[in-house]
View 1 (cartoon, rainbow, N blue to C red):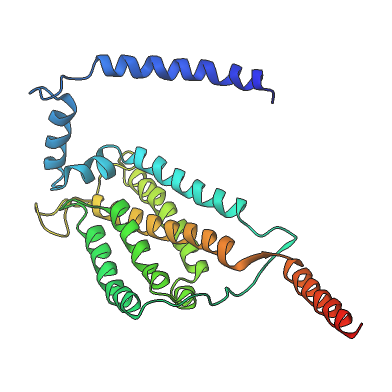
View 2 (cartoon, helix red, strand yellow; view 1 turned 180 degrees about the vertical axis):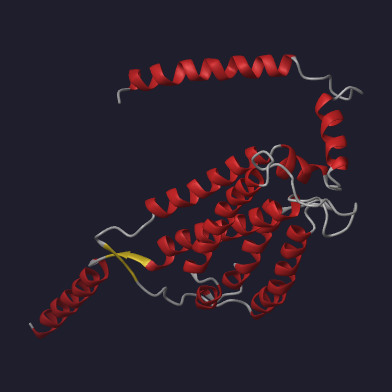
Amino acid sequence: MSERGRLAVYLPAALALAALLVLAFLRMPGFGGTVHLYRDLAVPAAVRHVTANVVSAVNFDQRALDTLGEESILLGSVVGVAALLRPAQRESERRPPRTGRTLEATGLLGYLLLPVTLIVGFDVVAHGHLTPGGGFQGGVVLATGIHLLYLAGSYRALERLRPVEVFDAGEALGAGMFTVLGLIGVLAGTAFLQNFLPMGSFGSLFSAGTVPVLNALVGVEVACGAVVLLTHFFTEDLTVSVAGREDRGDQHDGDQDGNDQGGEEE
């Protein structure tokens, strides 16, 4: 597409988006005011569905359909990265060379923080409907905890801890079950992704209906997606090499050595 063609596609969309943003900003409540329509609707709705964390009530109950879209965007992003970074025909995977040395204090700290970070991540996901946090935040913490092994200086240990096939399946399962739970609600006689499970008592772990279930599914999808995403970047940077490059380098070194020896004999 030519530059003029790109501008012809971009400018109408940009102007329409700018007009919508201006209208939205003009109709926003004044900063620091006492009137906030969204707050006045969201907080009572969260209380009715026994969800102590109002943010989770908004994400996984009041606008769960939007969260499904966000999950789909993350899933599509990971699939796109996997497609772009897949080895080309002239590339091959090799074992990463051992370079440098990790400080003993860094390695020890990484191994000590690994279980602590994983516990914190599970806690953030499990209590996302009660306290600040949730599946998005907890999933990132879990993925970060797993990769502490790499920071501790052991890429091979990281490879053993995160089998990519398992995390691929986990990402698909988390995203797919989110939709399945919405369809189960439809079969139960409610709307798609409507909160239909028993609400429980306020402040208890088993409360808020479908909110903790959807929250956990998002945690699985985000954690697995982040691990798969980083795996492809690590693979591209550490283990993928252009086929024949090293052979040509070795051959060049051999030729150079032969030339040196020939020169000495002369």
